[in-house]
Image 1 (cartoon, rainbow, N blue to C red):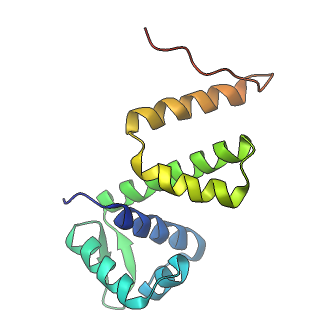
Image 2: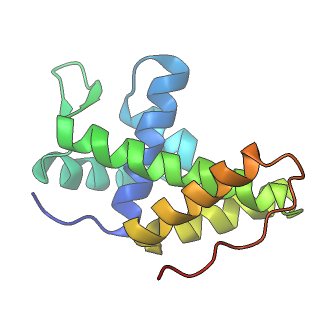
Length: 137
């Protein structure tokens, strides 16, 4: 399986969002979701198919391979967690979503997992005034 670039991850995330909303996905749905041209989607979908991330049936419906679903769900989780976290910090929702989209691609798994744990711990804290976690010893 080939490594994805940021744009490939964005396409997988968009496929997941459209699938969750509408139940089925075609290239035109992705173009609308991402506000890109149909030729751009066609090229990206071809690369995702060749990379083993999606399948396309005879009617043009797009579905995930197991590997594609895992990547899409991981990116989407990062997007949601980071957007919510930034919004909770007082960042305007649209800005938070834009920034989360940038962060979701570059943050390491280890850093994201620790950040997510910290956020979950803060959500359970009665004062909601959590300090950063102490450095690991």
